[in-house]
Image (tube, rainbow over all chains, first blue to last red; front, side):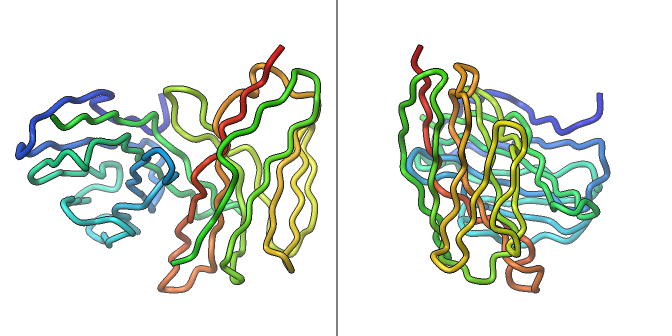
Amino acid sequence: DAGITQSPRYKITETGRQVTLMCHQTWSHSYMFWYRQDLGHGLRLIYYSAAADITDKGEVPDGYVVSRSKTENFPLTLESATRSQTSVYFCATLDGTSGSYEQYFGPGTRLTVT
Amino acid sequence: GEDVEQSLFLSVREGDSSVINCTYTDSSSTYLYWYKQEPGAGLQLLTYIFSNMDMKQDQRLTVLLNKKDKHLSLRIADTQTGDSAIYFCAERGGMTTDSWGKLQFGAGTQVVVTP
């Protein structure tokens, strides 16, 4: 089915471990985003990408790394997980051709760092 | 940075109207959005309004925008139990190299609909 998928949906990891969250889209939207959602903060932008091989930092990039070798994939890596990175992570794409510039969100990955 | 603020909680009885308020600070906002998040799910766009409009109606949803006061509201008529969710206000600046079309979200308003 067309759309945006994230994997895993749930992940528990230990402090100091590296973990990668996957995001895949089938629309070929140019723009992709990673957000984290924390109570009382809404969604905060971690990284974004305008196209394959073009990425840039958002509001809260520290401790995260992204890559975008293919248009359809935008993995987010926590290099050395910390408890403060316990959160729900959302990937989104942007349809830059629509008049509304709507962002489409994946179902989220709930990450717990112990 | 730019801020988007909204109240955190709203309780409403089924059949009544709900009004969710949002204020923002970025005067260059081009689009303002309302997203809905149901439990365990991602965000889904409900509606949006372009900054040169002051009202938009879409079935049970009415969006009002007061650019002078930088105030946005979402009214849901005849609120149903299925409207229970978190509602996020978001604003999008102009497509400059700095703003890049990024969205700035509020913290979300938890709407609880009681029978």
